[in-house]
Image 1: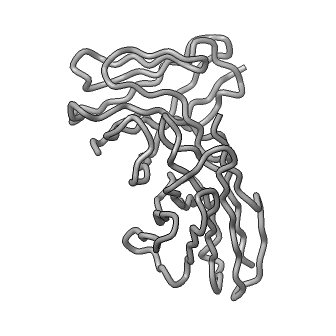
Image 2 (image 1 turned 135 degrees about the vertical axis):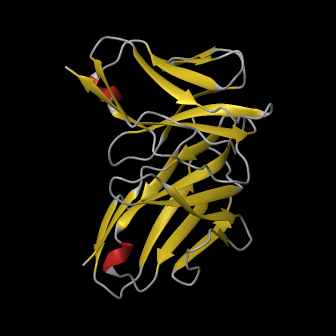
Length: 113
Length: 114
């Protein structure tokens, strides 16, 4: 799986949009971009994933650049409960597979009241 | 949505004893389950992959005789930490593969060995 690079931490004001960047310059054509988050002392939670088109669900939006070398996760109206470590993961396959996920260090997003 | 239940959420055991952690997929069948370990302020590290009805595959550096994994059914995998020592104290998390968008994680087990 391709390597990803994320800033170690970010702050965002409550109610504002949180934009979390991820670089994945070595991504292959068949690799998807996944985002998970981990709230303190809990298991990771799936947020969203995409291949090349922008995606949106009830939790977030995923913007993938045209060259697919980077992406941005957008939480449109951040709340205090969005404080967590956010992991950007690149992997082949859009579904579950036989291989576990490789977690980097992620971005610790802190929502400020 | 897909739910993975992990128990216990927290356990304290004496050094030298064994501890079993259960991971259940509640509303889907998981042919493959994964076990991760997370030390404080670090990321999740994959320990092993278990497939229903077969032996688990362990990552390099993980002792298979110490971390016993059983995946006897499509909805249950267990991790037993044998002869636990204080350095085994960690946050253990299971994950199941079998949903349309990939992996669902349990809520984790905080193991403290005293």
